[in-house]
Length: 374
Image 1 (cartoon, one colour):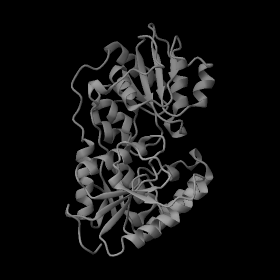
Image 2 (tube, helix red, strand yellow):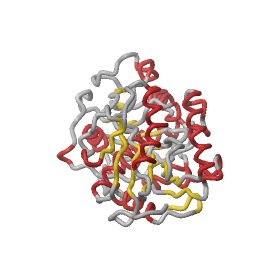
Image 3 (cartoon, one colour):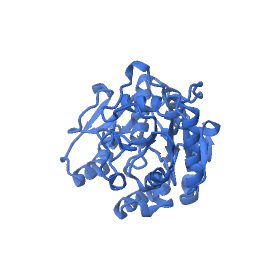
Image 4 (tube, helix red, strand yellow):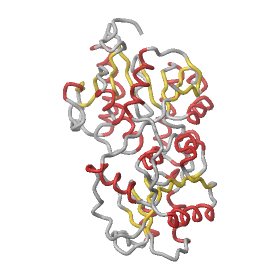
């Protein structure tokens, strides 16, 4: 990268804003929180947005770079994001010192000066969990990134090793910057309207992605024999497997399983603070953001014993072997016997701290070993 640097001592950051306006999952949460924190720290940046994208409240108008739009159709947006946006950037910022950052796994291989946050290698480790077109698109992008040797940020040492395993050319320019988490102030939480009564509950925060192993959690809950009333509360994308197993009884009343679907940040914070534990049985993860979100809100965490959860939660979580239903249910019964966690939440990096590491890395980016943590 050559040219005049900006006031903050580093290049202008152009953020691939294709995540804006989408339903918030883990990768979108990462992109939003990182961009907000970078803005708050005064990092010079512009978010690349199609002109017909609604601007969220957290994003100031001055930070938007509006691109031409060909409409809302998927193909039209693909053409703009994949072809027009790189040409727009190359033309407008010619001679400037800038970096394009794609925070959600992929971005157009045509972007110059490109840095990508790759959260995991799920499309290689478990391609059967996704549509063929989705897997194909991601693989094309990753192969192109390997040829270009783009800069890569990832969330865990485990994911860095997976990237090196499947795409060795990317290994030398991959660094680990773990996700952040911020505690939510008490006045900004609210009880979900769909959860009635005061029955004790455990919480699952996950999409219907097969790798989240939601069906196994539901089957295990059905087999649980408890001497006291309790619930399993699900948060995330709508799940056909839940509706099928719960026989339609998901209204928040007397059912022992309640599917709330998508909830607001304030509602999710309330659930973290009032649950007996957060349970996760994922087969594969890149980081496991709900685990750290739960811990910082003071919730107990029960999760499958896979490396990313170990990295994220350390000794603060209770682990069970994949497929060990007895171990999982024993851990659930134990947390109900213990009651809600009342101790001090572990100290985890905030989004502001993570964003500072990211910004510092961009100003002095060089070749580094895969798995290096900064």
